[in-house]
Length: 343
Image 1: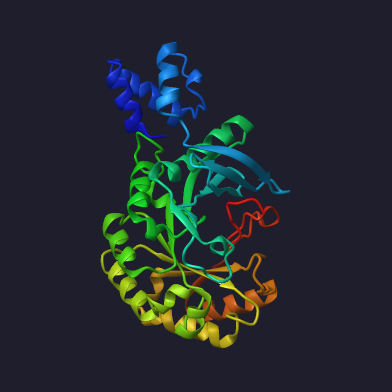
Image 2: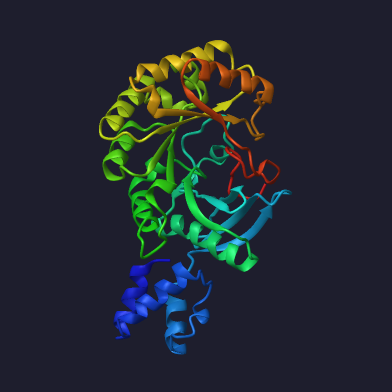
C-alpha cells in the first residue's frame, strides 16, 4: 500500500483527518484485503480508494505449501505483468518469517542460484517490497494460521543493495510503528558484498541486521561462485566490513552454501577461518552454513555428515557457526531456488 496516495485522495475529497487512521488501522492492524472490509468508511469513499490506492500493488498467481506446512511460497504478479516470488517460513510453532524479493531477476549471476538464470529485469518499488509482507499477513489471517509474522529477511530474488533507495524506503516503512511495525532487530538484509552499499547501509540502518553471501574465502574460488568478486574482491569486502563494525557492535551473518567438492574441503574451512580472523573481531561474525538446494545448476549438495564436520572445524577454531534449517525445498522455496517465472 502507498499510504501517501491514500492521504492525497482523502485530502482531495476533504475527508476528516481521522479517516486516514481508520484506513491505517484496518490495513496494518487487522490486515484487511479490501476496502469493503472497512465498513466505517462511506461507500463512495471506499470505491474511490479502491480505484486510486489499492491495498496491494500485486496480485496472487499461486501459493505452494510444503508437506510439513512450515514453508509457503507465493508467485505474485506485479502491475506491469512481471512476476516475483516470496516465501513465508515457520521455523517454530508460532514464529513466522517473510522472505521478500527486491528485484525482478538478478544481475549478479551467482552460479548456484536460480534467480540469476533469467537475468535482471527491473527493481521493485518500496511499495512492491513491503506489500509482500502485507500479502503474507493477509494470507495468514484468511487461512487462520496461528502466530505472528514479526521477522523479515531480504533474501529473496535480487540484490537489495543494488536497489538501495527503494530498499531503504521499504525498511523505513516496515519499521514504522504506524505502518508495518516490525522491530528493526527482527529485519535482516542480505548482500553479495557491495562495499559502498554496506557502508551506506551501516550508516542509515545501524539496528537492522546485515548478512553477507560469502560462499568462499579465497578470491579465486569466490570469483568463480560469486562473479561480483571480480569487481569487489575479498580485500574490498573486508575493508567495508571493518568500517561497518567500526560504528557498531552488531553481529554480521556470513552465509556459506556448501557445495560438495567445491567449497567444503578442509582448506576451504581454513581459508574461511583466516578471513574472519583477519577482520579483527571474529566474535562479531556468525557463519551460517547452508545445505545447497537443487537448482538448474550442476552442483551437488554436501552430505549432512560432511557439513557437520565442516561446522565442527569452524567451531574448534573459535568461530560461531550453525547449519540453517532448509525449509521449503520441495516447493522450490528454499535458499537459491526462487525464479519468479513459471517453471
